[in-house]
Amino acid sequence: DAGVIQSPRHEVTEMGQEVTLRCKPISGHDYLFWYRQTMMRGLELLIYFNNNVPIDDSGMPEDRFSAKMPNASFSTLKIQPSEPRDSAVYFCASRLRGLPQQYFGPGTRLTVT
Amino acid sequence: GDSVTQMEGPVTLSEEAFLTINCTYTATGYPSLFWYVQYPGEGLQLLLKATKADDKGSNKGFEATYRKETTSFHLEKGSVQVSDSAVYFCALSDHTGKLIFGQGTTLQVKP
Image (tube, rainbow over all chains, first blue to last red; front, side, top):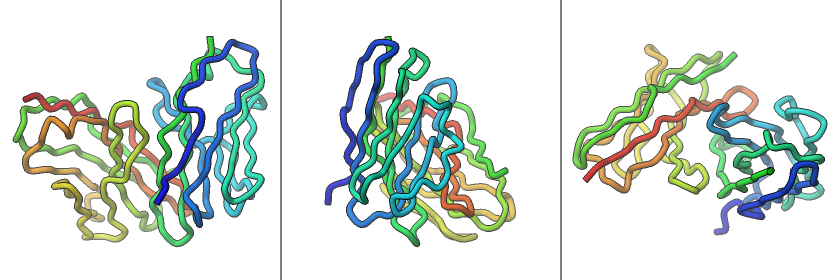
C-alpha cells in the first residue's frame, strides 16, 4: 500500500514568493495533519482536518499560512509571502478514525533565502 | 495541558550495548502512547505503541511498557546496532486525537 505522499521533497525559494506544499493521505484515512519541524522548536502541529474539514488551526503561525483539503485525497499548505524563518521540514500525516496512530509522509524540506 | 518529556540526547552507545531512552508524560485521562523513529532525511515512522496501562509495545527488538503508576513509557532494546542510529520521539495521543511529541532523543551507535 502507498503511504502518505508529499511533494515536492525539496523546495528552495526566495523571500516573498508563494510556496505550495502538497499531500496525498493514505487512502481511506479521514484525518490529515500538517506539522512543521525545526531544530529550535521541534515538531509543531500546524492544522488538522477531519473528513476534509479543518478542525484545529491554532498552530498556524500567522495569516501568511493557509491550508486546504478540497477532497479526501489531497491537501495543500500554502505560504504567501514566504520568509526565511519559514525554512523547515513540513510533514503531512494521516490517520484512520478509531485508531490513534498517525502515519507520516517523507516531508518537504523548505528553504527560503 | 498534556505533555511529554524525554531524556536529553545525544545518546552514544557501542554496538550490542543495552539501550534505554526515558519518557514520562502528563495527561488527563488515559492516552495512547507511541514511539516514533526518524532516520536521517526521512519522515517519522511508527516504531511501537501501547493503548492502555500495562500494555507492552514491541517491534524490531525494541520494547516499551505503559506504566500508569509512574506515567512512563521508556524505550528499551537489548542489543543496539549501527542501523538503529536515528532520532526517537515519544508521543501521546490526547483526547482530541492529536499527537503530543517529546523533543526527540538522538541515538548514535558506534561500531
